[in-house]
Length: 598
Image (cartoon, rainbow, N blue to C red; front, side):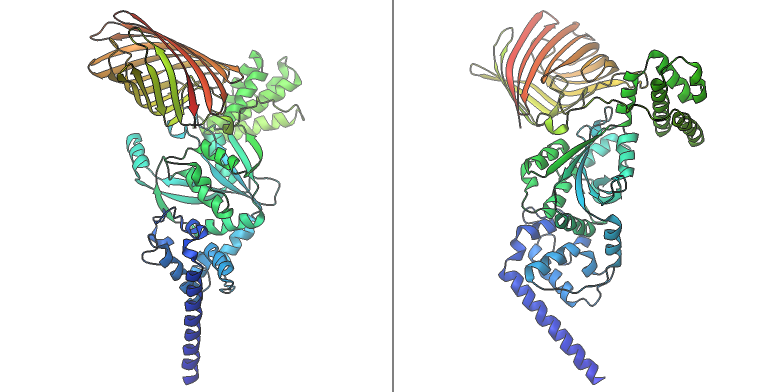
């Protein structure tokens, strides 16, 4: 027994000596001040952005990452438990980095759960994935980004998707917006099979998906995987504009390759398409791939089918026609193939939308696939190429223009932090989608400065109807403008809905738009607007809109707007606008200027 006490005492003494030496060595090398320790701690300045106490070993680890480093070394050197659940197994990224920096080994351990995950994941490459916006979902209009850890398998569907999202079960839109903006939700990292994320975004939400292969080495990929393991079940406050899904992918990539500074590309908000551009600027992107959504594929089928073929798809989808009945219809063999493929896609889409039961879906889908297989191999469906999101104009905009109004000719200076409107170039954007925050325009005329407009929020979804889809179009605006009365500022809230026709190149719409005005010109009215947009190619776009509104107190007002824009690259555009207002009298307004995007 005395021998055992002596052995324990010697062992503890040895551990204490080793621990003190390693901590002293870490202090000498100022490891807590290094960029990599700040990355591992998610600490941009002096405080970690991780809010979960479970992530820290020191009581004050969130605000004192030097103490966290000391405490981490103590655990690695003194803890006898080096199996699943221990600090040794919970923090493989910290351990690997400290072993390298301190030129030591903390042992082998028995981290069976972590090793099993790595074996199953077989990490080889990393891909940045960008699902675009959903045309009728304001919450998705900025898009989304997540990472995919690719294995050595050729198929990427079984790869793991690394996602960061807010946990919420709120159904109230206003509450969701408030908490998203001001931090009412916890965000978590999650790992899911890639096919499940594709099913969610590409099939259920009809969002086109772009994939960007990253040129990370295997060692860099492993560094990322080790840190992902450390973040399992760890939460931090989610903020819609900055600490969002895309922002947290930047941390993971900088952990993998510390020489890149992705977060430095952003100042006060992080928008998913801009993160794609940041990856490009840091020379991280290799090959790019496009996965069309189910909606894009069905629209492509529409372009290949005759009116007779369109009808056949409808009948096959609802079950009033069967695959064998197609033999009696005078159609080419290839069109029959496209009809059956489109019908199967539409049946699956209807099931996802909840328009048919699982039993109906299973029976009809199987019947269509069997009929399609009987026709043998055919041509591949041609799908029109879409412009890559990294070719879109930047999200923030400064506008400088000369205006010529009825009684004044102001120099107009505007600023909009985000993102895109219907009159701008759609290259890289979802055509027909608009989302604007704090679009502000002032006019300087001689010694007088006027606020011309301040749009707090403006959204639009112009979604054309087609043979297979019947979406409604809508838009809303809330803010100040000078469109009512005699060039006076008033606050307006307008919400409208209607329908649209067209495609990505040309679209037209008709909306009914009631509005309420407050301020100097309080009034309410009901109006109608009809408009059209034409993308000419070479990043030129023309738009026209005409509207008439009937007010309760004021005279009726008519408005015609014509606009032409040429986007010479992602950072600049020339814009010409002509507007005619007619309420108490006619007023013509001209504007010529440039937009600078950044």
